[in-house]
Image (cartoon, rainbow, N blue to C red; front, side, top):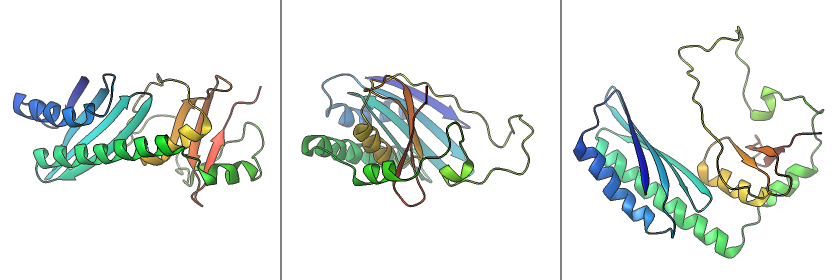
Length: 193
């Protein structure tokens, strides 16, 4: 198991690091290969936030919990990840087939190359000077996982609880983006060549 622990506005003690690693052993028991976990522990005023992103056997799972004690937050986020892992395994064994993905493909496609904030259910900020704002820092993430088909991407997106997922399409070997539309269906953005 490869665990990377980062502390924001808090000092990482050996005690909390040991607690995180001990709790993550519960999740590692579900996998036959070692897993990679990014852990971010943040303190904001009286809130102690534990955020974990786990990569194992081609799956990416993400969870976040907060409380007024860091140990409680870590326990809660590991429990949440454990539930997600069990749910993922059940779906893989049953053969997950998202209904909303097929419905989304039938809807009218936007003009090629035209991406809008409405597609993601967000409004553009009035000021757009092209510079990053201190309130909205840029967080960089890398895409280094196995290619997956659209059904598996839909499952990963649903389990992650995030608004979108960028993945390598197993059929085309191109980068695709799957997102959750306002009506709850899945949208798929593919490059046009």
